[in-house]
Length: 349
Image 1 (cartoon, helix red, strand yellow):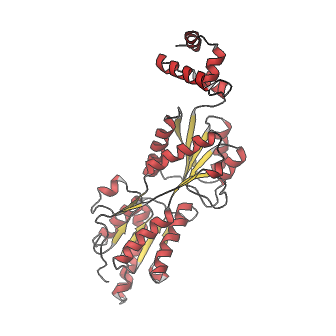
Image 2 (image 1 turned 135 degrees about the horizontal axis):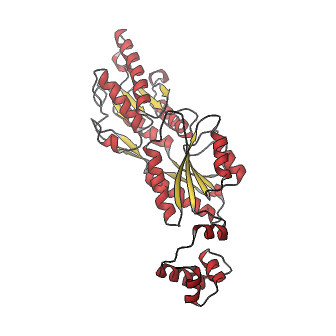
Image 3 (image 1 turned 180 degrees about the vertical axis):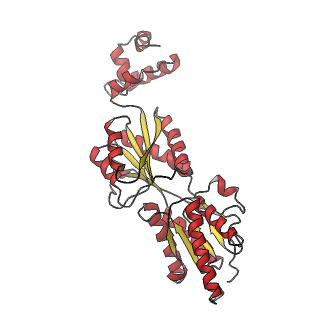
């Protein structure tokens, strides 16, 4: 089905039909609706190149993230991409994934990608407190929405989980269970989510009057390998203190983790130390992944509906492309604690 045949069947000019399909306001709403209904009924699909020439749009949105060499994209990114693709599809857009290298080539590669004019907008994942990628997108005038906030570039559109409150809830749960020596294995400190989560952890500990020295924060990659390594170090220090005759109430008894992957690594370290997860050392993750559900024991975690976050990213970007000002398009997502068997009462309480 060509646009010429569609126009002929409606008794309209090709120009009018083209402008109606592309949403031009100089065509009446009644005519646009009539053309759209006929096009759908007759199975008309515009030629991609012709559509791009007519509208200046590609029909493609990129979900962009940066990954350190040797690392990989985690389940969170996949869930975001799935949700974004669902949301964009409803508006006739495709979603693609673009991965940048962390380091000196990151902005060069992002600039090279933007120079190709391959997409109409960007969804940017895993923001930093000071994010040069956000600055570059702002300079280029590219419509974009970030998953996560920034500190230096707040005048932009974003969707974010309530990270500070999430880790506050997790830490408060452990405090209520009698734990007084709790560690937090966090992501890299330059990431916005890690900054906010540490604030939540420290706030909960401070409100309970816990000594900062008994509630250490460790930073690393949000992977199981990193979680296992850091947890092993924490448990080794715990063993040294025990042999030195430290009071049992001061012994590390719980670990809050920045992701489920980190928590799974920590659980492996606990088992390797001859301890029982949920009895000797309680563990709480973040992300509510399938792996956490099927862990042994099942992992207590925090859920923030990642797929829905992706849909909301797409929604805000479509509104921005529709003309709404970017700084007004923000959304803070709720977070829920999912209790399972990886945490429990402190034996030393």
